[in-house]
Image 1 (cartoon, rainbow, N blue to C red):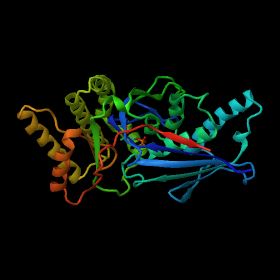
Image 2: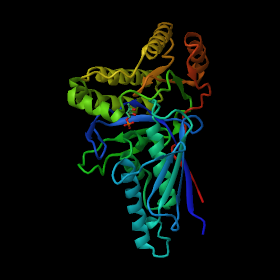
Image 3: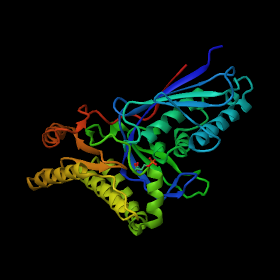
Length: 356
Ligand code: PMV
């Protein structure tokens, strides 16, 4: 018999209210809620195939961009796979006619169409695609909701939970010690705000210096500013952001997005020893967008664009569609060497699947 297989892709998501800090490291429980926008499938996505066959030698195996990675006895990959197996076993116990896929060895193959670990959220799309493909292979769609899958993806990489949905997505940090309420929910579908576009300026595709987990642990341990962000800044900002999205209010969305990016990077700088994710080109893009917005507002028009930066130097710019040609022209003029994506329909649906 041929192996059972499923293929899924999941896009990257870029947070506009950032997640930074874990209250429980093994379970990946965040210190604050976060909110992101899921980009479209064509530009930054992971494509993952999962297969199971009784006849294969025991043990699960995984290849990332053609190179085999060890799954190990413990660790994030193992946790996600074990959780999905548990859900499959529950189905098999209810219906004895189902093939016992939960007992078959798995082979998983994943590819990114963009640089891995360059601050472009590859772990988010990677774990979202892995969870989607294995859950599709295990036919869990009727027994496990997308939010429940997001809870599993969260244990691979925190931000991955948000890539299970398209459009505007919140990760509710939750309160339970076991993480049962720490999952993603849809805030608004992509179609709610089609004019909003994203432009990614790849300032550098080198691997990032401080991995996010190590950076977060250091910030939680040493940054008083991060403690203040968690207690006093994020709750209000989540509220502002939800309202801005509901009203499709770009002025408010842009201000909150840029303030949150700056606050997050200030927390990195406040960490001891400090963490620098942005570089001189990143800061020059901040200056350009700030000046554009100032001039546009002074002329009686609204903000032109909003910048945001994750754990790396690359800028993501959000802007209403009609502003994109101007932004593109200016970015090309001032940063002739930057490599950026010039197709702008960048916001899209979450993980999706094909199943054989
Ligand atoms: O999920 P991780 O460990 O890759 O952390 C991502 C953290 C940020 O990208 C900096 C912010 C976010 O909310 O995505």
